[in-house]
Image (tube, rainbow, N blue to C red):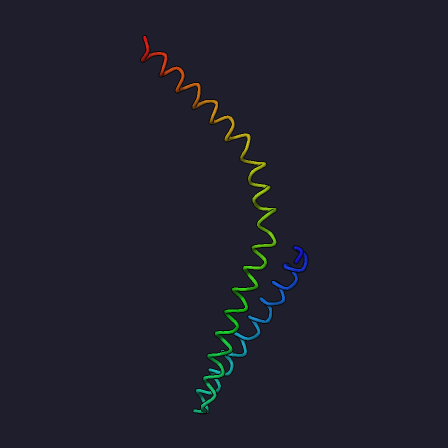
Amino acid sequence: MNKTALRFIGFILIIIGIFFIITGIYNMLFSSISMGATSGIGIFKIFFGGVFIIIGSFMLYISYIGKIVSYATKEAAPGVERISRAVGKGFSKGYRKKKK
């Protein structure tokens, strides 16, 4: 699956999950008012809505993680290089002082 499809399907799953949660809460509230036995349907809708949101969020995360990591490595690489040089110089100065 390419990244565009992952993003599209993930977004759709999040929307479906939100819809299930809203309708599940609606069913729970109005079934408790009328004392009906349909509150179990609301619980299942809320559960499946949460599952859809988690799966959709994971799909979006997978599709965007490459961009996030590549940006972070491009921005962090010069800083890490500078710090490693400075630490290396510090160790070499300290080692020379101990040697004498």
